[in-house]
Length: 132
Image 1: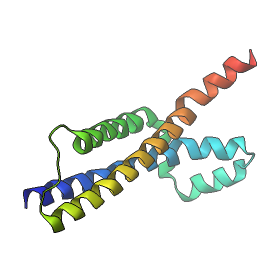
Image 2: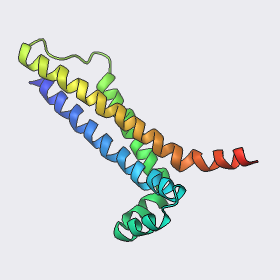
Image 3: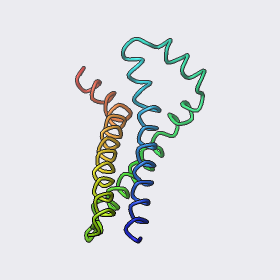
């Protein structure tokens, strides 16, 4: 039963991590992408319909710090030393399947976080540097 509780915690943490990293993408990468593609009116409409995006964007440093910490904690939960699935055939198979999905969701979250980080913090300085 202890393995099942650990699995539930790992799955919950993985979904929480996916949610927060998606928030970084929505708050920071989406607006920059829409404006870059010439869809400023779409962005204005989005902000007027979903006003919390402005608040997220104003506090993007905290959003990225918290989501990055959650990513690090999630990685520790999944890849910590001594973590193993039970040998029991039914629980072991379920645990292994859950581990595979958790790792897929985790790496998808890391990808989303990286795209958001690039768009929020690196894209403009890189563009300015390339133009000079």
